[in-house]
Length: 296
Image (tube, rainbow, N blue to C red; front, side, top):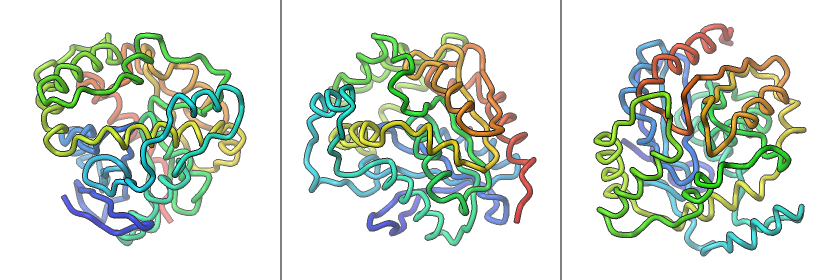
């Protein structure tokens, strides 16, 4: 793994595959480190002809922490968002999209396929309308438009989203297992051993709950992207699980509807995670999408 200076911060990243292949930038979700893009999953994408780049968003993992901003008042931000008022945030998804593009520039990559999951999907969408000249195609997975009229998360999924992670290592790992059972994919086997191993690796690599709160407020401050998404011209694939309890499938449908010509794929049994059993469908869908794009 390595770091690069971009957009005024340090960004931790690593890569898979041949640098001469079309770049595929992978953007992870809320409070989630890049290692949640499993090495095996990334390697499968690389084996299908992509130069895969995964990275830590600001305020997570080994990338820069925006500590000077302090801790936001999440309840105050939620109240403002629900009442249609402006949400005060030290940064928004615009800044995080600029981070992603800054990373590409730092790597000397002019254009890439932009793939994001959950909040990462929101960032990928933002790259597509904010930096259209840098986007070969857009892949938005288990994400949404930010339209407040869409169905909310299931109550138990919302509860795990808003409950702080315990600070002790073993408790953190146990809590992670519970979280992924709640929001995971009922249509695929649940690999508790894998979740425990990865959660321990996350904790040891960087336990930093403060960044989670700032990222959450950044999402709320960004608002409804529907009108901006109507201007996206990049070929777009929207993927959503049929059983997603955190971002209901209506969010994926709304995203595909907002972007002219977008393809919408539902993966039966998938929730709000990347269950290994879903990898073949995900890898095949991403490959089939990117291979149709004419390179400059």
